[in-house]
Image (cartoon, rainbow, N blue to C red; front, side):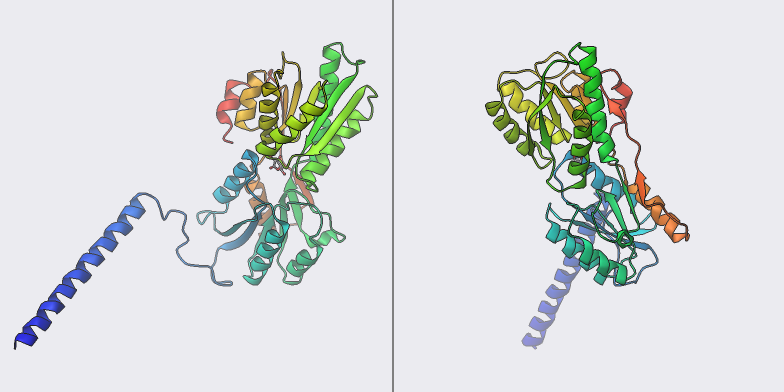
Length: 350
Ligand code: GYE
């Protein structure tokens, strides 16, 4: 009898514990919901073809710059459940082997589309062939690939990097004329982005195609600085030690520019419109445009990272059986102190 009472007492305690735990669980779920913690979590995992949404596998190359962060946000804000997509996103952290792994995993998951921003141009033939054989259309975003057979991808949505480089050159031409220095010796250093990436290759080609026409433009040095601020600073410090008379820095993205400007100022020299060294940058991020408005960066060639919607337009066309072009360029501008208005700055979300 006593045993029975003890048993029912402990069952009672167990019941209370279960009720309390369940209440706690419900409370925590509601709290999480309220805080929006679950807002981005898909309600059911994607299992090979088991969804009526369009499944897009996106392989992003890394998170080296402000531009890249904005590009990732553009993708994540576009390929949402609300817009009819199921997004599988992977960040390759600057490693081609990670991107190849991600692409293979998208193929084995039988996604509807592969979107990817290749860290470098070469070395993609095999994996893209695998995607083609699996019947999965590949859309390149931002950077391009260099492959034997261009039927391995459907289209590329990105920027005209050669044009960006040329624009940097044309601006310098005009500026030197304006200063009455068109025939003087001009000493230039170039900070280049990730070696082998199409943005680095195109911007270099574009700028040098203009520089070639000017015998008085003397390129003292050109080095890779990986599109990062830390590397831009380090490379610039070395160049300042090596070359005494630098007149112009051409930096292939804003993050390297920030690092370079720190190094220049620490060396006791000044930058920008009234400074010792002319600074030319690329990207047009909010922080850099603020420095253009303050006269610290002379010119910023815009590179538009908001490419998610362009890619989704391409997917929509493909879904409707329409033909798409092999290359789409996004709209871009050139910014100097004369056109970075308050409106431009307030609208810039990256
Ligand atoms: O300019 C830079 C980045 O490929 C256009 O990559 C892109 C470049 C961009 O990290 O900031």
